[in-house]
Length: 621
Ligand code: AHR
Image 1: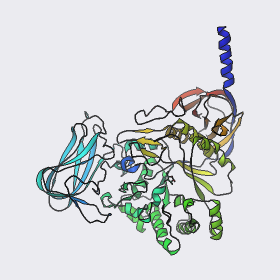
Image 2: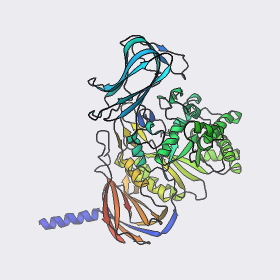
Image 3: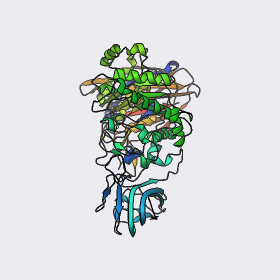
Image 4: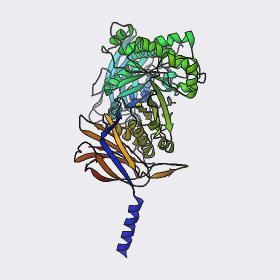
């Protein structure tokens, strides 16, 4: 009886596990893989630089808003100028808790800088917000007219890592002193570029693990701003950070612009990625726009910006970059005109885009120009504006934020794209499930969507997830479902983050044929979608084949693999991301609940693998 029951259970399990037939022919090349397929998108959102990647620990270093008790706010009311604080008694203390705490770590050197005028002795340091314990301190003696004072804070090996810390300035000797700027950044142990100290090391390491080929910046909405005065005005982000006016960011907080154009470019360099440069195109989020003569200045501004990136020392802006400390031009192939201009209901983008395109191509014919819109409405306007007679549409930036069901439903979208039409830059996309960072369900939707893009890499030449970062403290998030979460001290990757690392880190140079039979369909709310997705690429020179598979369903799947073509390696490295439930996720307190596991598996021409429910696989062989 017992045996009968086990047999029955076994048979039931066998029938429950559907079987997919998958033939991978390594000799049947479908298309080349775009060398820029996997990249990153960034903008100031979710306290992404301020309180995020930008390693400035002091919130409001220009002391614009921080009014210590009993101190007077001095200085002109022009918002673009720093304010000054006057101290003239010996009890004055100024504290700064950074962005939801300041990260203190053992054996760390912090470099500080203060602008002050007057005679005073000031003690500066880092201390616990819990019990006042001082972790590190230094003494500054100011003298005479306004000047800069450097200081250094060093923690000992016995200091425990904490984010419950604040920076303090304490007046220890009488006199009169005016302060206008205080900054503090940890010194990075990994110096890659002159700017290495400016990027938070743990976040930078996580980004490198994503193997990005490009960084799309500076937005997103952040490029446009709510109004013209709040757009990303690149010239104002150059030079010493203390002289940068900063600006109100469209996501509701102040940006010091410490992460300026040169910092974005060096960030690319730090990761071995190229910039995809978004240039402001005369349209802001409130719906205001300019056309005709009024556009001239913005076009010139964009040309100057490109010159700053790639010009040599004989050009005005190339020389400025050299003076700013970066003699070599940066590599640049793509420039994007505006962001999401399909929101511009006036239809002015046809003119704006055409004018930018013509000016950029006239001066830099080697650059590819990306348009942010090509809807039917735009096509009609383009006809009126005789756009297509005047130019070729190189690349269109498409954005897709969707739930799990819709992501799966649209996975085959690019299979049907016109091969003779413009190329696609999928410059923002995400499966929006889970917050602040995404869950396993989102990672499955993302993986299936990436399969579709990778398989169609002749059309989709580049793609990047958005948003990249979120500060998980209350008030830190403006946009749900993000890739990487952090507080002042720790950071973690969402399941979607790990799916990105797996996909970008395992890719060949050519897409090869995969033929799937008996793919089960599954119900997802009111829709029926495929349960299984796959793509294969090869790197002929390296004799490598990469097979990516996704089981997006709640049941296991058997895959009968039939490898054809080039001789196979006997072993493969299999990386698997899976979880017990669709809602499973990582968090700041449980950062490694869902992470990929890697093992070596034997592979022959005909192999059967069982893919657990809710799983993403990469086979590298
Ligand atoms: O990624 C968040 C926002 O979504 C971007 O700023 C904008 O381009 C899009 O609407």
